[in-house]
Length: 185
Image: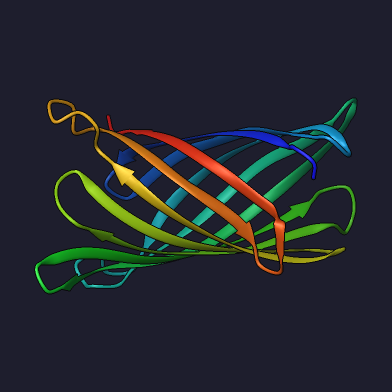
């Protein structure tokens, strides 16, 4: 068993009702391959009618990965779909995000398909299940990530804590404990 550690910071800001700017920064410290870092800047815009039940958006981004002194810039495109639903008295949501990341210098690419189903139990507690699929030139992996989202402070509902796990399907040794802090501004 190896113990790997990763960190990701994801920021997004709604500049206008039809434009979101964002950044994603992170690193992975692997016991087998050392440290690798990445950074992405992106914009997201809605597609079509935002008044209907189905919401669509596209995303364009630029970024780079680096390991030691090796830097690999990339371009990223994405398409997202989402919608809310009601089940009895509870509300929920479902979403699918696809991205393709093209390495600028060589033919390497990363294709991701992430899906989420979530349910709000009340003002403070939600659950979600996410499935992440990634394909690179060397192969593909799929993982499942159940989690609990809690608003721990009643007087600060804009702060949420997400606690869960992520397990690679077919490889129980590739299981991670995940903690996320969310803050709405």
